[in-house]
Image 1 (cartoon, rainbow, N blue to C red):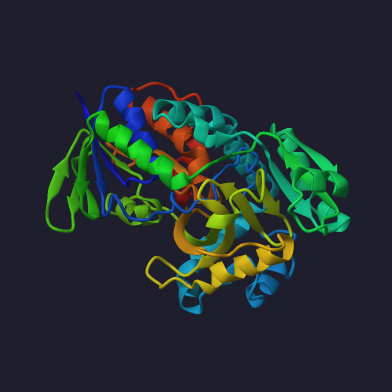
Image 2 (cartoon, rainbow, N blue to C red):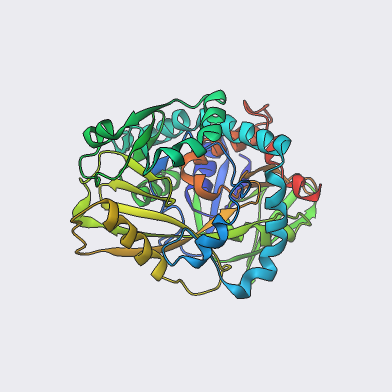
Length: 414
């Protein structure tokens, strides 16, 4: 049987391993800490089918600066990290060009259209189909003016196949009585779903992959090696060398470092996300609620109400700033009165984000024996199973059902 090494045991790496196994591949999983925390665990829990528009600062004017100055704002950049962030930011500016924006949105929509179906199939296989709730999501606005400003984005989403409809203040209260009565209008996103506990899914999927024969190697991958273009391997920090027929790099925010070892370049940043989970408030909401103007979400998980969001750019090594988690909780107090905050749990994780909001999926242009699956940003949980299916098709030499050209790592050389 052919053999693949998968570097990274987060939700994306595990879905790719599971997909490879179903196609007859032996799998070796490499991870620094299989039981440790990871971005998959702290996900807000949404299967965000409608999130097909790329990050863009176009049309925001001075709003990003106001966010940076606002202790409760959704954006933070640590001064020491600005020089390293600069190339990423310059690439982000190009996203707003109309042709680029539409191209990227179309590529994101292509992944998201099949994401829920693929995710359900994976959950069914690992015995967690009941952990998925198809209740849609609710985006709320405090003013009609804010709602109207976002109209062009909603219309593009509709053109790309997203199902949504507007609801008035009374309908918002009927859908989510726990919300403070300050919202003038909202949008129901019909295709959105959420899970009961992202960490539980990661653990159960890993157990399934191991039960199917995967070998787990604990260690830090420092290099991807290639004696020839078709015979790759992985070097670990303790000197161990692993070889296989293929290597898949799915190491989240650390993936660009491994790609460089075979000469591939990716613009990848850790967009550090924060949340606070309130164990005693798991039933306060029925569905994920998106607070549009404040740029945060609240999701009812089985382990509590998770209040998440925010983006902090500080690199991979800076210590967490849990004031960001506290700021999210402060916002939640405004919109969800009388929260029971006993046992509140703060969290920070590294979202692997590209400037064009597209993941990196597909083979290395330089070393065909190396494949990539990283850079999913906020959509790692959403796109995980579909990414696995695309990697699986590539492994068996089939044409993927989605054109993977837009997700090639080669785009960063253009």
